[in-house]
Length: 81
Image (tube, rainbow, N blue to C red; front, top):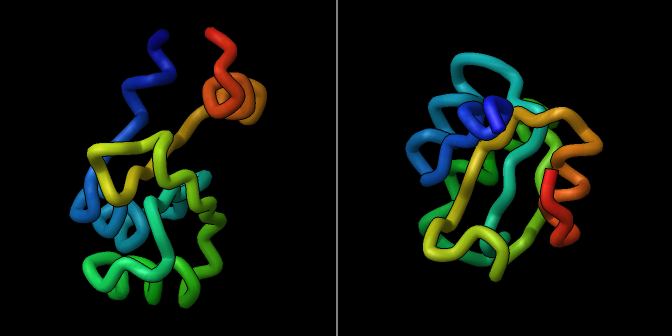
C-alpha cells in the first residue's frame, strides 16, 4: 500500500503538483465545474493526462495520483491492489 502515499486529493494539491512537476494523471469530478477552471487550464497548457471520474473521487473535485499503471487501473475498476 506504500504507493497510495502519492495520492494528493484536492484542487490545491493537484494545482501544486502541476506547477512543481508532471503528475502521472489528474482526476477531475467535472470539466464544467467553475471551481476547476484554473486547474483545467493548467492541465491543458502543460498536457497533463486527466480523466473525469466524478463519483469515484467524491467528496473531492480533483486529485493528483502517482501510481504504477496496473495499480491505477485496478483501483479505478474496483479491484484491490
